Image (tube, rainbow, N blue to C red; front, side):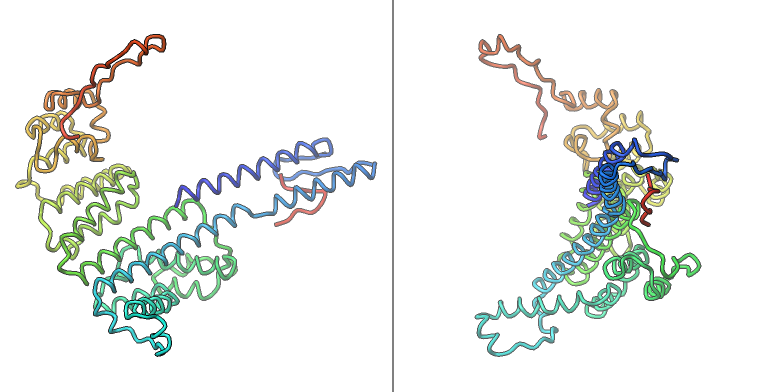
Length: 420
């Protein structure tokens, strides 16, 4: 979503600059003063030329006052909350259908006629659930999470680390949707109740904008809240499915690393290591989560946090695979090469494909000493050696090409003075 934001805003800004530059070029002969921010023009004596110049100035003002980038930014910001709302609805559906007995707790009236028209109990359940979710989504996010806590006897949903900023973002969404982004007393009271310093809050009447950095943080927060809510409810309501939930959570962080979304991997990775989340999973799987979180830290230039994390766990009784991982993370490459040889072709977690795919090895596998060790261990080059491209004039004479190496299992200005 952040990429869509950047592409949309950049495209709009480029278009505006191009249009303004074109008009500026046309009116340049009439500009008598220009300080780079404001310029003044002198209207010609000929009324026809004056009329033409006035039309160009109207075009300039129309473009200069259009607020296109602000409108786009606000629209995309509101849009990501729409996606979040849709996600919450889908999540609730999954929960109810995974635990059908929850339907008994829905208090919705339905007429006999409507029930007969629906034709089946399943259709009636779908209708009632849709109405329940619609009613749920009309509440504030704070109340939504409180409802979930009461309904499912969970006490931690409003204790996520990102909760405070999440509520501020949702209130900013409300301001943009209903009040053109202008701060009101309701916004101030709600964010104050969440612990924000009143002295640092924007004053009533201030227009709140959605700048790129804020938009990016919003994407991170909503992604993290979505993942944490999903897995907290999953563990609480489907205790017999903990193994699959644990694999899914670990895979979520791993996929974020693969897509280089390290800033999102960090909060979800931290959540995955919370004591209430690691209950019931093996120590080895916990260590995998530690390594993956450390990878995210390192790629966000937070190596100090990565070291603190790694040093907070006992690695003495863990497989050599984790020793290799810690050596790579700490850039101890000579020791890492030795560990590669000790592991050989296949360890508990590190095998041939891991060197190609695991984000842990992104920088390590660029080194020649790594490639030399890989060749010695697996008997083939890290990258396939391909034959040269055949020359066009001889390609018809080539009946068979030599095989490649293979590896195992792979505000508006007045007329006369204008903003630049």
